[in-house]
Image (cartoon, rainbow over all chains, first blue to last red):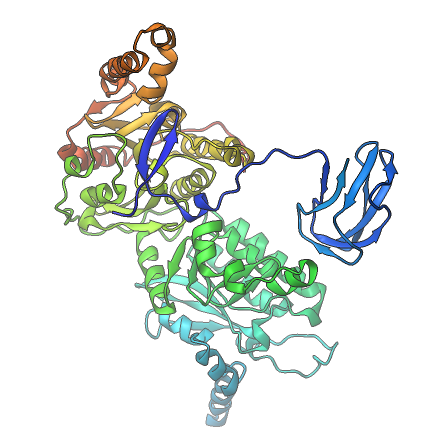
Length: 102
Length: 513
């Protein structure tokens, strides 16, 4: 029989094989509110802020062009930009960190 | 009739049957692929193919298409027989403009699909196409839409089989996705909505076609493919095997064969370990009870924690749904629920009785499962079992804990027969978990907590880890010896031949898709 691993279900430990998909599953990490990530893959076509800038909720931070749309990425709350993690022209994936707030 | 006219027909046919020409066909073969016509020949009974629409021409004049001859407009369509039984078939011809789909190409396909629906025979589509013929613009899109519409109309009426023998990208993927069974071949099949080129342009991410949407990915990870073959020949053999097991349409039963005793010598009581934490291959149980020990597995590589597929009992086709303790302890999760639900609905649509073999510890815990929607996916299985009116028989082999007990075709979801082996444990949860909750106080207050926990777990096992509590409530019909399993199943199946069950009148339900 294949190599057996332990798996715990409702306090019981079972001996069983694991699947490739199970081994590749994403381990959950709680979202960090200080990090602003992309929700869609695309290209950063315009950057409007830099590290140290003070922004108000709703201020335009950058334009992320994706699926032929120019998406306006705005500040989710009042605060200060700690660092900008992307540059104009960057192609970024989904869930890529774009801006870090203080 | 002038013999010249006959000769002219022969010449015309010979020219068109060359598809994209000798060079293009040679290229196809050099890539390790059969040509469209070779594939149809391989699939159908020898000499049974009747081609339709060989002379169909496209009507496009833009972008240099005027006067351009595309043999058969890039697709071969017709009828024939497989194992003596009629089928409709089409095969896209990659040698003709990359098998690209234009309006007339699509109309040839929809014509043969309409034919299949009207004549109530299976329809088999062989896909090998670069995608929409861009020169045709919206005409190509119309073509896809008309195919999807017919796929949906034919669903649950005639078996629809898709064979991916080359690229199948963009909108084209949705026709196979709407059909009952998708076959893929290692290193040949490629399916994706957005190909590697676009992904690289947009994201800068490099990925090969194989890693993005190759046969193995769809057979193992996405579940888009039901059958994985290592070459085209094996693929066609598998299709023939499937066609022999299923009925021609939803008004008939699958053709019976001569009953045969199982060949497997493994005994059920020896296959199932007595420790409920130890695994075994549930397919050994299926082979211990099915005719000839034959089992034709569907979705063999996807969601391996549940096993589904066809076999025969006393000569007649049945569908097996079985938890697989060998993988992930046989838990239910998003993928296994989807897999089982789809298979149950297929069996129900095509008059195939369902035998459920149960040994599962519960649902897979984890944030990824919860966030992936295990609630709505799991609900599909409850829905599929409850809605099915074909004979539904359950054998509880070992663990039947909690929500999973209900989900696996329990009496409460309308099972016709529920049998349990003496090894069955039908309980609200595993002994460990149950004892920790019920005897929380006793354990906490005990001097030696571990000792007390052990004691209480054993107390729970003695009391509830058996089939007799459920049997005492009439939730299972009989506790049987392992050696009686096949006999009990055949008896139940023969008793349910005339089963008639009514459902409230409705247009259709609203399953948790």
